[in-house]
Amino acid sequence: MQPLELYIHIPFCVKKCAYCDFLSGPTGEKEKEEYVKMLVDEIRNCPDAVQDYRVVSIFFGGGTPSLLTGEQIGRLMDTVREIFTLDEDAEITMEMNPGTVTEEKLRRYRQAGVNRLSIGLQSVNDEELRLLGRIHTYEEFLEAYHLARANGFSNINVDLISAIPGQTVESWRRTLEQVMALSPEHISAYSLILEEGTPFYKKYVEDEAKEGPKLPDEDAERQMYWDTETLMEKNGYHRYEISNYAKEGYACRHNLGYWERIPYLGFGIGAASLVPGELIGKCRKLEGKMGRYTNPDQLREYAHSYRNKFQAELLTETEEMEEFMFLGLRKMDGISKKEFSEYFGKSLEDIYGEAICKLESLKLLEQDDDRVWLTKRGIDVSNSVFVEFLLEG
Image 1 (cartoon, rainbow, N blue to C red):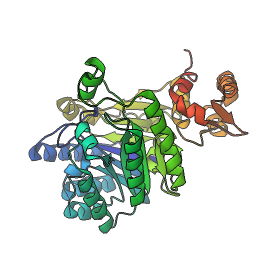
Image 2: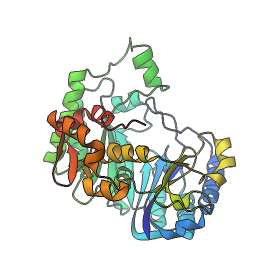
Image 3: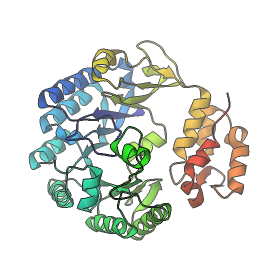
Image 4: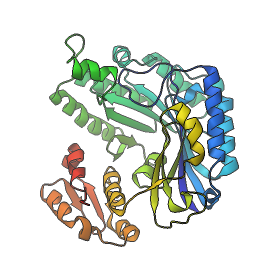
């Protein structure tokens, strides 16, 4: 049986953060229950071909999935087990925000099968949290973290954001040090991105933030970036992807699946799927082909369309090759020439030899007999590197 990942999108939150452009927003209890029913229906509508796959990971993302009750998460997991073959050791992650966590919820989530938590802290500084629009304090995060430990969760990720308005190199170091002192198994450290359409974009790009805390300058942001890698490695966190660090054996299997292009099915409003040919349509067999589908991002459209979600658009070979490089090179160990050749029936050198030689001469890439990976310098300018792997036609 081939591996398959599932993503289940929960688009609810207590309030929208100032930097967030994710598909999420506040809602009531009735709407949450109706949405859970739609998710159950969507999962049950999967084609029979899913029986040929084994689910290796599930990710409840959002929004704030921990706004759902333990009973609702249990119902969703029961439906997954009804339709899919679930690996005994499948990684099942739930994102949660401090301030939405109770002991009852954590207990029920564990009973449902959730075995990994991803807690959105972002900063240990309460003023920085306030500026971001977060609903919690650092103290509330600590309460949630210790409650999770007390209820048996032994695989926890903590999300952090650097380059926050008013943040200094010193305050970012404090955030890293205080979080590492808690010894979570995994830490995701992202740099703030000003996304168009968010309050932060309007304030700091359109209005140029004439008042209030300013964004850190380029030198400070660069120092935060370097400090992150240095301090993480010093404290036993291995960098395995551009923004992700883990203790030995705790790299996020679900995210590695994305970067290695393991097929995945997305359920819920706005959720994306990368599906193998036999899952496209009810009867067609398109071995060796991959297709992509994204659910509508409007609830009304989603409610009327998810029963036809597997009519995916096939990816061209060019698109698949580009994705293979873009996603694989995000990992510190890069991509395999052998895997490229086995998948596409063509050698990596024939397709990308010129680009690899150019980037290697600029000391942005390194390679050995089988693997190609980014250097530290290449990681710093990864977006520019990825452009070199766009193919014409």
